[in-house]
Structure formats: structure tokens, C-alpha cells
Image 1: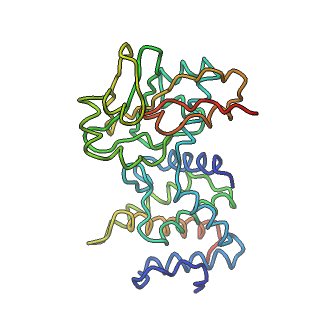
Image 2 (image 1 turned 90 degrees about the horizontal axis):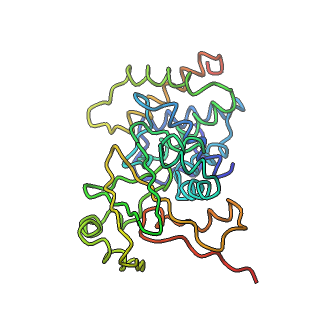
Image 3 (image 1 turned 135 degrees about the vertical axis):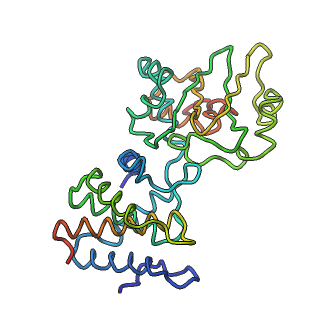
Length: 207
Length: 100
């Protein structure tokens, strides 16, 4: 049995099933069916899973394609599937759009439900009891602590995620981005602005 | 292998295995308790890509293996799942004449 893949660091002795996995991998390599580095590449990707860049692509696409934006706001799950995202059963994605008079922000008061197919792993603060409790009670104050000062006339809507419904905030497209490609736009969309605790970055002025 | 391609592939796997054969997750995160579990998943992805076997076909083997092999006492859900995954992969390869 080959053991030269560098995965032998864990202290416990290998279980029977771990040995079986290694034996199968050795046979596959021997038959030239699967090379160890091909498996390494997949494992690395899957361990990182998805990140907020999926959500950023969704938002940038909504900014540049008004028909897609409509579909996204009508049926988020279906719309993100167009871009190849989503898939887990029971995850209903609802996209909520910011406007000049409405700002949306997402929380999960019960635990840490989060739209992972588009945002990846939740930040630590999202799971913290103070965020979960205070965002509902005093959203304006919490957002100020995040550095987001909203005018009094802007209504703040707080969306409470659940196992059944996950929310994605579609922020407003920043001014001065008319000439940008969809790819360039997606770099302005951070994780926090899709949770609603920030707004998109201003585009960098090229010298 | 690009990141975007990887995410799309993972979404495809998720969609194909949803329900009885869904990948073990905790609040959305894939669960790998031990390295062999990730390698089992990786082997499946690469073998299917190389052989052109569909995820629907693999799913049939996986559901059957899960049914045949309920979690042993004290065994975690992820261990039981990826043990069934290995069995399914072996059964698929045997059926295709790729394994003795």
C-alpha cells in the first residue's frame, strides 16, 4: 500500500476504512486511472469550498443585466442556478435589493444560517450572539459600528435567515462605474455588502 | 483547474446527490473529519471525469451502498457516508471491469 502522499500526519492509527481508501487510491494510480495530484487538486478546491466571489458574480450580473436582476429578485434560487450556483436541497435563496430609500441587512437570530452557495463560509461576527441579538433591536447603531452611516430617511430592513430561507443583499451599483466590465464590477462587491453591513467599494481611479 | 470551474463542479455534484445521497455538511460547510474522506470524494470526482460515468449513475451505487451499510455504533455520519462512498466507487469500477 502506497503511503507517499503526505497525508500521514494525523496522530491516530489509520482506521480500516482509511486503509481501504488508500488501497483503492493505490490501485487507481497503478491502473493509470487517477493520479494522486489530480485528487490533490480536487480536494484542495473542495476544502476551500465556495467563497463570496460567487455572490459577487451574481450581483455584478444583476447590475449589468436588468432582465437577470428581475429574475433574481423574483426567484433567487432559480436565478443563481443560471450561473451554476446553489444546488443543496431545501435552500431557498431570496435576493433583496437596496434602493436610495431602503437598506437591507441579513442576520440569523437563531443560529448562523447563511447563503453559503453564494457567500461561502460566514464570518465569525455573523455567528456571534451580540450581532444576532443587536441587529434586530438596533440595526442603525450596529451598522454605524461597522462604519456604515445611513441617512435617517433610509429605512433599514432586517431579514432573519432560517434553514428554509437564506437572504442575499443586492447592493446599489456605485456611481462612476459605467464603463466597467462585469468582471471589474464583481471585484467591488465584498462579502459584507451582500450581508448588508457595508456598501460596495468605490472604483479605483486609474492614474 | 480554475476556481470558478471547481465551484460549478461542486454545485453539479451537490445537485446530483441531493436528498438521500447528499454530501455531509455542517451549516453549509463540507465536513471532512479525516483526510481519507476528502480523498474519497476527490477519487470519485476524478474517476467520473476520466470515465465519463454520470453522477446519476454513481448516485444509484451510492444510495445502494448507504442502504447496505448503516452507520456502525459510535461511527460519525461523515465516516459512514464516505465509507459507503468508497463501496459505491468500488462497485462502479467493478461493474465497468476496471477493478478486479
